[in-house]
Length: 260
Ligand code: NAP
Image 1 (cartoon, protein in one colour):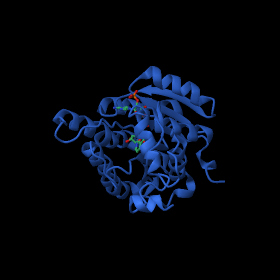
Image 2 (cartoon, helix red, strand yellow; image 1 turned 60 degrees about the horizontal axis):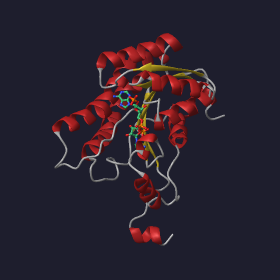
Image 3 (spheres, protein in one colour; image 1 turned 90 degrees about the vertical axis):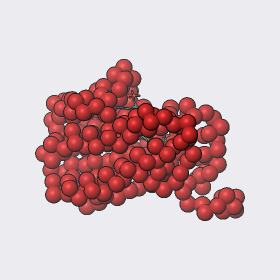
Image 4 (spheres, protein in one colour; image 1 turned 135 degrees about the vertical axis):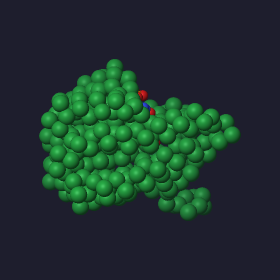
């Protein structure tokens, strides 16, 4: 059965303490994985782990800033020590402060690059020795439709990191194929999370109106796509993307949507 290969696997979910990462961790826990949820705030991560443990599997928390190399190495070691290795890395943590180019500071640009792009690289690099040892390692990156496919004013830095993650993926998957490791990415559309809620109800309402399915996605929708890439059955898929957006990128015009 699809997903049965996940039971007992050691899984790291960066940003697993909230939002999409929480949904990813939940789906893996429901499939009896051993999950390490990671965020900078340990208390929040611990509360998430307690809640997630109810779904099944063994879930624990670890505090790390993925933009920091020693912290990211400590994260990988903690997963390996607690769970006997690392089979799956869900490189999901990300930030999305909004600022148009004229208002954006060089510091804000650097911060988004450091967390979203360098953080992806550091997470993969730190987990690599363990993923190699696993013999069937999986890296699943949470990118976005914003950057790789679409644009949104205020997110030049964010869009650049999300497109950059795919550039990283396409070469990483080649470098790591000899070790049996696959590297793929899920591209969410607008998913209901704490982060999205903080952008206000008008933003959420406006985004839902642009989605052919008529509603925003749930965090578990991303979890199911990430789980698929991590299964034994997906072992011959690498360097690929799945867009999970309720059809948001499809309509060629406002009129096309209106005619539905
Ligand atoms: P969120 O609700 O704000 O959650 C972000 C998570 O990442 C939290 O667990 C946060 O924990 C953690 N995090 C942030 N910076 C970190 C750092 N430097 N080191 C370690 N952990 C860090 O965000 P989200 O909406 O779920 O977004 C998650 C991912 O999905 C991001 O990569 C984002 O680009 C992508 N995405 C989201 C949407 C959407 O609609 N929500 C759409 C497309 C793509 P702490 O704050 O405790 O560190």
